[in-house]
Image 1 (cartoon, rainbow, N blue to C red):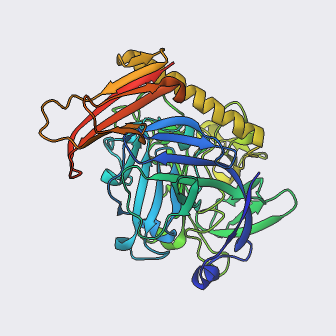
Image 2: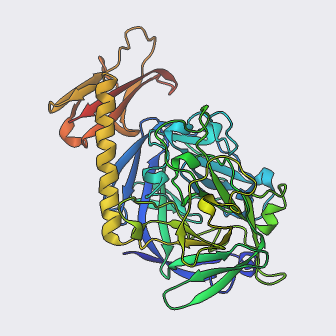
Image 3: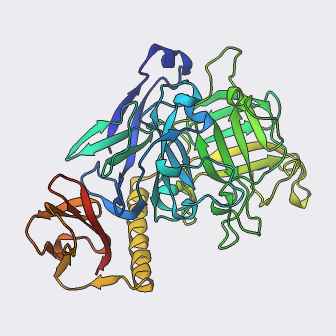
Length: 472
């Protein structure tokens, strides 16, 4: 495994962090790589970038950044500020605690949220989104998701350079997210659901109070994409919220449909919570001591520790949220609760009493589980891509050679023609008939996007042709 040291970069940030989290060694689990171009590959590596497995592709790249969601101000530029089953947000501009107008973000979006569904209450990326063909709640939006605070890099050749404050997306940019967790990782977090209740981090050898409940949670609400999440699973973690789902994963009737499938509750830090009205569906937590370090954008609740992992076949490598109630002695599973209710956690189903405690169980993230998960997601994507190719009558290539060309007969001036495969430059020619022959042995099995661009001698685009194909 790879390790790296995380230290606070400025005295201001150092003053905000609690002593337990100012300096931590981290364990890299895997890294994500995504090319910001139509057809660009979405890939995952668990050997430090030595090799990558393809788990998706880009349907449309980002052309701008956009003003970030309100809590993005608590994050640092060049880092992940939100991870959710329906989107990943990266802060590209504005220092920590900047004005909201100065905070800029870039987003990675699953296919169902390419267009915001009816009733969507979250952040809309627009042209600052990198839109993928990966479904909501799987792959990089679930078991291979990054964590809040993970560093983002730009790759040029074999070199990784940190994303700097003021980054603006360019066509073909390759972004790499190092997905890591603290080496000293807890077993669970427990929360007493009452005013003044303790929020405790539980390790195998110690317990530590990391926050205090200012306002308990009483009800559940219709929070975005909870119908893709699962009962008692983490739906969203960002610099100002933790959202827990009380809804099952449904095959149909998702966000925006006539059938309500959403349900869940939130935990928010006290300073950020003041920006919204008090509601029963949100628990508010505050620093342990008056004047203590702010919780916004800080570990363990709002940076670094909490993710989306949920493997139905392996609870030991999943995040899971359980409850204690006024009538229960032991922890019990979260019940399914759909829709908006003011007191659904006070009057739970089956007359088990009100919720008195909440527990978040942490995964082990064992290396063999990570390897299996990456291979499984790659295999699942390959099967999905082939089925899609057959359904959409996309050419399936079994031969060793593939010929691609562009008809430039009606163009006045052509200086040169370039060929990109999955966003990467493969060849260029200035000789008619502007044809390219590729060996499919050089391409990984799966779906691919060929992009051919005819340029003038002055460098302006004359014609662009896209072709989809699948290599057996």
